[in-house]
Image (cartoon, rainbow, N blue to C red; front, side):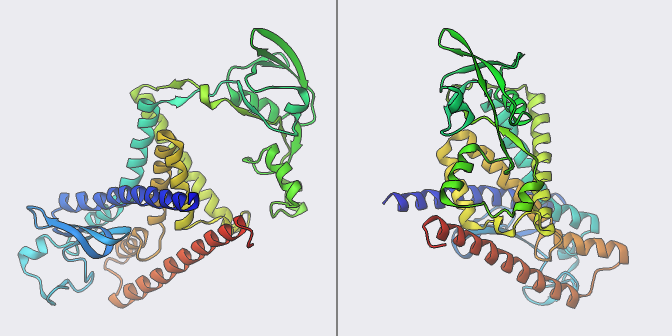
Length: 398
């Protein structure tokens, strides 16, 4: 019963987030199309048969499709990008129709309309992160111990949950990341921790243990892997190539972390910087998959996204907003990939048109879109297969 409840929560959370982000993406296309005088025939959230819809005063059909996994904006005159023939009745367009036709707009206008979708996703991510920094506030994680992990240097030294670490080897600290910075570069080095336990000040010596795992790994993951006889899929040579980090074995006290709200302009600057940083890290991760530095098995599909969305909603407002921003950035980046059927594919064709002085042939564009569709479907199938493999392993079938 709990399993079914979790699936329901994940599915609803994912569909809600996806609906919001698809609406934002398509709204970008829609607004730029209207701004450039293009008639928008359909604004659809979801594919398939219409569940509900209405016409606005401009003649646009706003609709919800029965398959809530995406959406689209249909603009007048985009059906046949080369001949300029209205795809609804296959007749030459009138002069009035050409004025509101997407195909008959200048190249820079078409580029702006297509690029507006991904741009809207990035702008939305900035807005969400801005609201986190300046409205909700971000937790200031102090150097308080929230949990001591078993079989670690912290437990051996006698650190306890609730201890406040005041200094490390005489260096005063107040934030948990300051503690992490010191510990990470002092593997196998005895460190003196000045702590406050209640009203008592104590000095405790602990020696951070060395670890060559991923940055996200912790001592408890290492111990768990040893118990289960796993090696995280790493070859000995790969592990040896990784830098050694020191790990103490404590987790921060998030429950009592005070919230700090940034000013409007500072928060906006942080939001822009964070959006850029997340985009760079996502692209770097994709690049590492192509170079073989990371396994393509890490690629996730709809099931992983649903699980991430469900966990975020259960984690509260902060986690939900961060996840919404992260998925929005992913959606913006993916749509910019130079693959026909994606916005980036259209932009690639427009770049060729700018260089040649005329559009690519209709047949070449058609073949490109077919190839792009095949590539996207194959990628989706591969990512979904990875999701199922992870599920099989989780339930002991792997």
